[in-house]
Image (cartoon, rainbow, N blue to C red; front, side):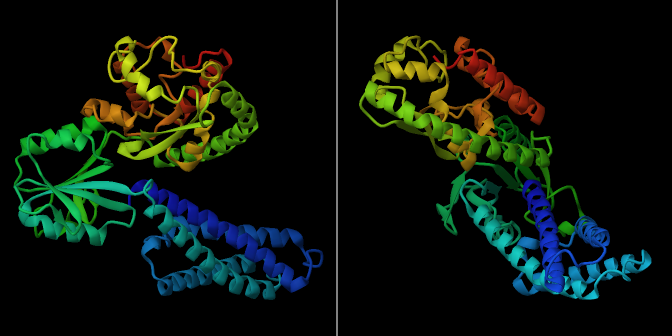
Length: 469
């Protein structure tokens, strides 16, 4: 399991277990006394509950009892939960005896708590496991992996990885160092590493690469690793020899293999989790604001020009994932067709398109672009997970197809509703390379503090009316 999912799993289950203990304790107390007035010493009851919570925390992080949670069968899950509750109750009873709480605390409450907590914890764990399976199986959450290996080892490597990789991994392709006479292996596309290999890989939806090719020259491996590094794609290089025991060596682990992992990402996955929580909260608030503006903007758009209120377009998200971006329509319906006629007037060098006083923009469109109101529907993309509040600019499909390895690294992070280049005088930028420079500067220096600063600067940009032209 990769570090990000492990953190979500461990902390998520820990929080769920804490809530379960509180609910079980309250139910046990109420069943015993029929109310909360006759429970005796309320302070002792409160302190006993705190000891249960403390015991749960220690057991979770020191014993690591939820290790391999996602792979555990129902039978194994029941056993682990029963053992966890038995140990927790024995420890709490010992503490109660030592502090002389047992004299004033109802033993029947302990019995009720034990029974309720076992069944409630099992129910919650099965519910969480089902939710994780659904989450890990979604297109947005799956980690897409390219496997690079040798023809003779292809079947064994593929079988080994499928047995050891978690359900959140998806092998999207196999690249062989020798020419092969088949195009698929177990329904997975197989390609040959030729002179155009890195060029073709640049346009793939790809998160990570696994290399296991002992006979491949070091110079070739270094060239590929450098290429993936420029693209912002994590690379796992397997160092072990065929037939050797991976348990006798340890650098990192990927699918049961000992590997060297090359990555540009150096931040904590806990901070990424906080960033996602910020996105959900901010996105929900943004969607509420969008609902308030919607009827007024919709009427204005309809009165100004024929066509739908919302505009949708396929954009490229993190590591090549496609998604539909939503905006309030600010252009006439034939905008894409007229774009070809205006390409000679493009004021930005490179892959982006922008002209002053674009004739395709409607009267209302100029207003909602100037105030950035046109981008409000993108809060839906933020809540959904396609975008973040702060990130890089999501490119169009046409733009992405022209990317080189250097440009591709700007999509190694989730695209954002706003970003560093948007608050750095975006209307004055005249070269696409400057946009890329700002995006890569954001990726390399990312922190939660930087996100907060950009959000505040974005508010100022909107208030000052320096939106898109």
